[in-house]
Amino acid sequence: MNFIGKLRLGVNIDHVATVRNARGSSYPDPLRAALMAQEAGADGITAHLREDRRHIRDEDIAALVAGLQVPLNFEMAATAEMQAIALRYRPHAVCMVPERREERTTEGGLDVAGDEANMAAFIAPLCDVGARVSMFIGHDARQIAACARIGAAVVELHTGHYCDLHHEGRFAERDVELATLREGAAYAHSLGLEVHAGHGLTFDTVAPIAAIPEVMELNIGHFLIAESIFIGLGPAIAEMRRQIDAARS
Image 1 (cartoon, one colour):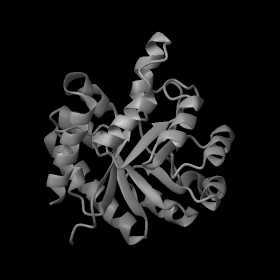
Image 2 (image 1 turned 135 degrees about the vertical axis):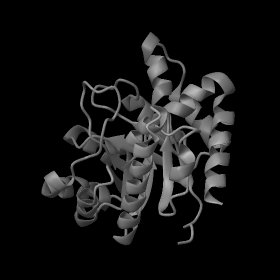
Image 3 (image 1 turned 45 degrees about the vertical axis):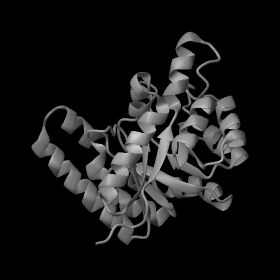
Image 4 (image 1 turned 60 degrees about the vertical axis):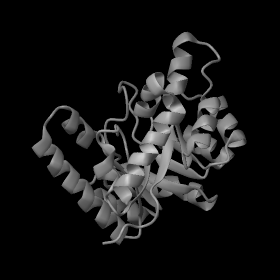
C-alpha cells in the first residue's frame, strides 16, 4: 500500500521535569523545552501526569496548555483525578496508559479488552469535550478490536519490546516483533482507528517503525532528552525528523 500522509513527531518532555525534580529546583523548565521542541519542528508535545507526580506536575500541564501552539497529548491513567484534570484543561489529545507506582517507566499496554465496559464509560466524557482519545496498547488483535468498540479514536502501539530486542542483539526475535507490530497497525487501520506508536525509540530503531504505512504519529521522549545532553535538543529533534522523513519517502 502507499504511505498515508506525513508522519507526525510528538516530543515527550517528561524527563526534563525528572531532572528538575532531582534537585527540587525550578529548572530546567519543561515548558521551555516544549517551546524549543516546537521551534525545532515537533508536531506535538506529550506529557504524562503520573499519579505520584514523579516528573510532570499539575502546574506544568497548566503552563503547557497556555503556552503551546502545537497540540498537547496528555498521557494519564484511568483515574477519577486524572479525568477531572483532563476535563478542566481539555487538551487536544488524551492518551490512556497503564500505570504502576513501582515501575520505572510504562512497561506494557492497557488491557482494554479485559475492562471494556468501564473503559468505554471512562473515556466517554473526554470524547464529549472533543479530546482525541488514544489507548496505549500492545499489538494484540483482541485489544485493538476492543479499542474500536469503546469509541477510541486512536491506538498507540507499544514499541518498547521491539526496541529492547534490538538493543540486546536478539535480531531474529526483533524481526518477529516488528512483523507483529506491522500486522497490528494494519488491523487497527482497517477498523478505522488512527495508529500511533512509541516507547523506547532511538535513532537506531525508529526507521522500521516510521516505515509502517498506517502509523501516523510517533511519540518519542527519553531518547531525545538524553541525546540533547550531547548535541542539544533542537539538533536531536531535527535528526529524528530527518530519519523518520527518510523512512517515509
